[in-house]
Length: 469
Image (cartoon, rainbow, N blue to C red; front, side, top):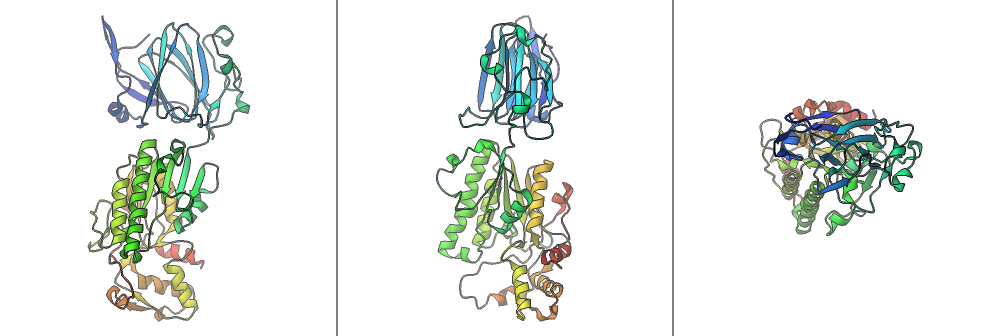
C-alpha cells in the first residue's frame, strides 16, 4: 500500500552504494502525484548526481512476473509508477561484498539507487505493475554484463511467490549460479603521462591490475580530434592527467608556445569535457607557475592566478577548464622530484664529478616528491574528499634551490660549501635562448590537504630517503 505524506529521505543498505529512498507522495480524491526524480532535492538528501540519460518502463500484467538477476555497467534509479514489487539486489562486483543480498518491497512511495555492478531483480506483487528506471548510459553491445540465477542457493533469496509458480523467461532461468558468475570489475583508471616522473610513481603505487591503464602521448594523443570516440569512456571512473608540457624556457619560443598550449590547455579541455559527459573523476596536476611569486607568504588554493610566462599561462588555462568538470581534483605541486632527470639528480651528479656549481638562491619553495604526489592523489580518490583544488608538496621549512643543493652535497658525502649562491637574474644573464620568468616564491600552503587526513612528509626526511642515505 502506497504511503502518503512522508518526507524525502535516502538511506544506506547492507550493500555499499545501494541506497533506498522514501519518496513524498501527495494524494487526494483524484489520485496522487510524486516527484519521481528531482535532481536538486535528491542530491541534497545524499544521492550522488549520477547523470541519467535514459528512462525505461517495464509493464507487467500479472502478479508474480519475475525478472533478473541482471548486473549492468551503469547506475540505475529504480521506482514503481503503479503497482508494487518485491525487489532483490545482489552485489556482483569484485570485492569483499560479492554475493551480498538486499531485499525490499517497492511501491510508488519508495525508490532505490542501484550502483553499477549490483544485480537487479524483481517480482510483481500486484497486477498491472509499471516498473520504471533511469540509467546513466545508453545500451551498448560492447558493454560487460553479469547475471545470476534467480534460484541461486548461495544468495538464498526468499521470494514471496515460489519461483516454480511464476512467469520467468527461459533466458533468466539459464543464468549461472554464484560460483560461476564473472564479477564486474571496477570502473577503469586511466593514467596519462605514464612515462614521466609522476606517471612512473603512479604505476608503482597503483600496480598492474586489470582495470588500471597507462598511456603515453604516443599511445593516446589527447589533443587529437575524435578523442571522445577513442575509448568507451563510460567504462572509466577516473582519469589522472600526469601529462604536461614542462619545458618552461622552450615554451617561450614560437614552436614551444604552440606545443605548450596544445598539451596544457587544449588537451585538458578535451579531458574535462569527456569527464563531465561520462561521469568520470578527472585528476589534474597543476603548478606553482600559475602564480607570479610576489605573495608575502604561502599560496593557498584560493589565491588568484598571475602567471609570468607562457608555461604558467597554459597551466592556469588548464586549471580553469578542469574546474568546469563536475568531478575534479586539481593537485597543485612545486619543484617536482621523482625518477629520472631532475634537480636533485643533477646536483648529485655534479657533486660526484667534482663540480662546484652556483645555484639560484632567491627562489624559495619546497620540493614535491612524486611518491608523495601519487599518495595524495590516491588519498583524495579513496577518501572521497570534496572535489576541488589541493596544494601538495613536502612539508617543513621552505628553502632556496641553493639550500637544497647544499643539502644534496652534504647527504651524499660532499662539502656543501662547494655550492655558491647566485640570483635568478645573474644566473640567466648570459642565456643563449629565451628564458621564462620564474616565481621567486613557490611556497604552497598545505592546510587544506592536511585537513582531509593526508600528512605531507617532511622535506628533509623525504630528500634523504630519495637519495638513499
